[in-house]
Structure formats: C-alpha cells, structure tokens
Length: 272
Picture (cartoon, rainbow, N blue to C red):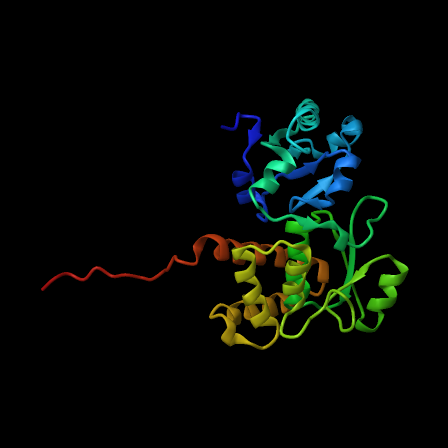
C-alpha cells in the first residue's frame, strides 16, 4: 500500500492528461535512461544531482518523482523538493513499476531536438481550427508539458522549422501529418505509443471534425462547431490555443469518464 509520500501507478495514471496534473519528474540515471529511452506520459527528464538548482522552479506546485525503481534517487529528490516548497511524492515501484503495469510510455526517439531550455518546439500553419489545436493539447498533456508552438504563414512552415529547429506538423509532405484516413492527431497517438481507450475515442472525434466525417461520431459536429467558434473569437493564435486547451480537457474527460452519462429535463407529472 502506498504511504502518504508515494503514489501507485494506477492512481497516477488517472492524473495524467488532466489540466491539474502534477509535475512528473523522471530522475533516472543517464545509464538507466539509455537502456530504455521512453518516458511516462507528461513527464520531464531532470537530474537528481542538481535538484537544489531546479527544484525551486516548482515551488507551490505538486510533483511526482520517479527513478528506475522508486528508491534512493526518487526518494532523495522528493525530499529535497519538499524542502523547497514543493508537494512532492514518489511513484511506487518507479519506472519499472509503471512498465510492469503495462501503462503507456512515450517513445522519446520520435521527439524533435529540444532547445536550450529543454523544450520541444513545433511549427504549423496560422489560424488553427481542429488538428492544430488538438495536437498541441496532446503534446502538452501527454508528451512535453513545456512544448512551444509557433504559428506562421502556410508557405513558411517548413523553412521556419529548418531555421528554428522546430518540428513542422499538420501540413502536407512532413512526418507529422495526415496519413490515409488518419489525421495528424491519430498519427501522433500512434507514433508516440500512447494509445489508450479515452485518447482513441477522442481521436475519432477529432478525425470526424477535421476531415469532414461527421458520421464517425455523433459528437464530432459539436467539436467542429466549438472549434470554429473559437477561431472566430480569437485573432491571436496563442490565445486561441490556451482557450482550446480547456475545450480538449473537457472532451477528454468526457471520453474517459462520462460517455455513459446522459442529461435530460425530467418532469414529475402528477398522477391523475
């Protein structure tokens, strides 16, 4: 049973992908990480050796720390973080425990190079509608919470990517794009290795809204309507992205927790 400073893999999995998820910190040694370069979804890789230097960045927040087995590196790092004002727990069983539970892991070999601050950088066409909001949401919630997104003129996406070491997405003839009937959101779920029932259900909605296939899911037209409405509300693409994060948070929670729930306005009629 988990203590008050540890959390089980199953419980942590329920937090990942939500708007209020804790900071997930992987402090495996370089040797351990080289042996398996995957990461728990939404986690960031940091070194236990300089936790006093970076730990204060998370003061006032909640964090969950993992190492290979949830032992000395995670325990020591979490203790330091608590000294620095972070509500820190450790993952019970660490990375190996998560893997043994057969929970999703992000294939970091598919990620673009990180910038000097450790962030992945992505670039796509300006004036996003569906896929270009859904994909950033997926990346920030499940892949890289610090990811940066650049919105530029369609004709300049590839060139900007080359000049600024940014990964182009949702344009033709690049790796992160539509493939057959799949939209870019589908492709990212597959390539990152994070397929799970809730995300796959959400992917069907995104595909239906993004590719003119409202028949794929009854909710797809609603997602399209909300997406187009956001596009009209915001002239600033980054402001639209921030608003869209909340939209996809809501659709994800519906896909995960509320698909069987219904709503009506029942009336109690007096019996004759």
